[in-house]
Image (cartoon, rainbow, N blue to C red; front, side, top):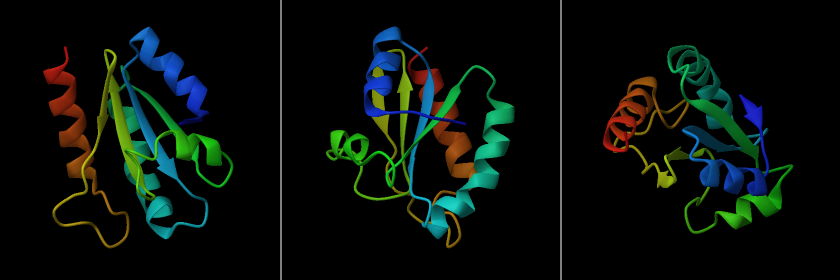
Length: 115
């Protein structure tokens, strides 16, 4: 996963890149708990770029997406110029908010929809 800024995300959208964008904070235990899931997803989806914005470092990046991101962790999928904020899971995981199956399903469904 590569750290990016809000302006870099705009460029990804313009280019039509398929990307997974995680908004996280260093001190967030849910964000830290999400990292093992992220490692598996990065290995599985070679055709998806994985990025993150650390809201502690990039406060302007977080505020640029304030209509879509209400806290951390939050995830936005970018597919062929579409901007898809993931909704919160119906049953959030106590350790990572999003569990692996939820994220895997979200990526698969959105990649198919916007191919």
